[in-house]
Image (cartoon, rainbow over all chains, first blue to last red):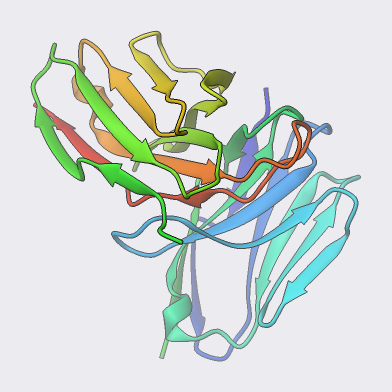
Length: 113
Length: 116
């Protein structure tokens, strides 16, 4: 079955620096890759997603890149701010029929002022 | 629109008991998925319901079951609770535009279950 690995597990950056989180997946049939941000005690919230027919997507300070050949996708956050501190999860779809996802283990990002 | 809601928010049960959790999706969303979140295992997919039918299922034992009502509200039931079932149970709803198209999932606040 699908396996999603995520690195690093923890990441500390200085405010204003960039942060990069990488995920790899195993099932070449996966075609939808969302990223979620979960602040302490709160629900996961989608921050950006990418489909397999696109190589890169950007939304203000956040971007995601996808390499289908290598089966990996990455989250890039530029000009980090303290409010970016949270746990970030990547996910990969494992079914073309409905909603069925495997999540990475998460990356705890700390943005130091 | 109101977001996804879950009840109850907190629950304490003892081993062997059963529990029912409820999820109300965003109005118009017909897909409801359930996840278990624990520090050790992360976010794990339990199942997805669409049009009152279970459409996808994760790798959980049969003690975990669910259902969906005609108004898209969903319930999840865990029977014969074990200590390891202590977790945050999240539901997520999605708008459905096509069967072969993955949609954005909107999560509820979760139900924190503690099994003693």
